[in-house]
Image (cartoon, rainbow over all chains, first blue to last red):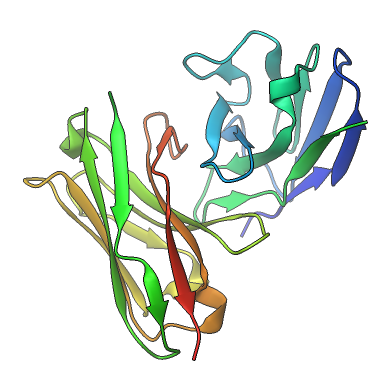
Length: 107
Length: 118
């Protein structure tokens, strides 16, 4: 099983700041990495797939990078609606696995 | 508009069974892999099971193998999860999700809560 490790667990940020979230895989997943956003009481929403491709309707301030075992989600200028929990997920091999999440909260 | 609507959740005793359903619309169901993902209260996301378009391939997380069965009815555009021998640790919101690109979860339902407790 590929273990996904996200850091930090919590990030306190002010609106307008640039945010960088990290996700590390215990073995290579190539570019088979997705990012999701989840707000309280809501289902997750796909942001990024293929490590760097934005899903339909996702604003350009969200970008993903990396390959192999190291991945990054960047929010260029945090908006109020971006405060949420973010998860990475590998789909390079079964079983599919998620990271434990990074909570982005208001500073 | 793509819609995924789960149903069938509820309170069940340890050792009991429950069958979840996911009714879909707005897309050609038979063209896509489908998945179940769960989230225990206050916890993160956990993938549970996936099924190929024609049902010929199924995958499960180890913790549910032998207890849960994923299935689909392409004629009725529906996905199911039969859950047997339920345990307290199966308590979670269960989401169905559609995969478009690889095994990503592109579209999600609103979830259905399963509570396993005596």
